[in-house]
Length: 192
Image 1 (tube, rainbow, N blue to C red):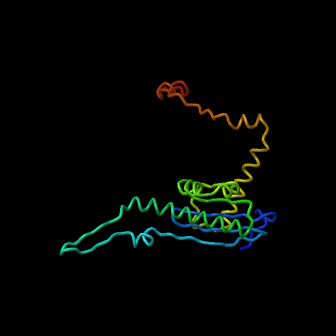
Image 2 (image 1 turned 90 degrees about the horizontal axis):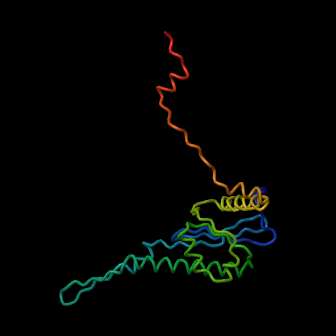
Image 3 (image 1 turned 120 degrees about the vertical axis):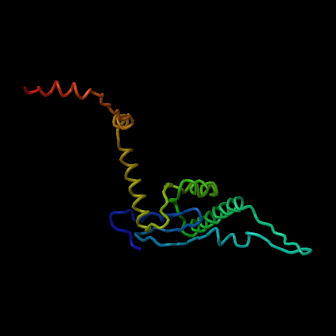
């Protein structure tokens, strides 16, 4: 997919955009004005849990059943998902010799992905966006990145005085309650 002229084209070095959710991730490479889908990972918990849901057997005319702890299995599945995402990121980084990684994920998922990353990938990580954009168009991801980059540049160009003004809290003035009967008598004379 071609990147529009008003957005960065990543001509100097390719960039990886990871669009992740709790159990699903999409990997996009942006380079030379093009963005392409490199990989995709889907691990729906119901599909992954089929073999772990339970065991039912018979022994001496008795039905025996054993079920896994659902909560513990979900935690294990989330760790497995994070490891697989990290492995895919490592493969893409090595293939394309990337210098920038951008992650779009909810805060809880982003923390998990960050913990699973190795030191090399953490060094390449430029920005993390704590929004869920799982079904977003890849161009929307680049637009969001570009907006944040412009926002950061405007804050860098501010002088110390301007920064101080921007940090000061806005003071809201409260209106005093006035007795409506007295206010009406003062402003409007009563006609006889």
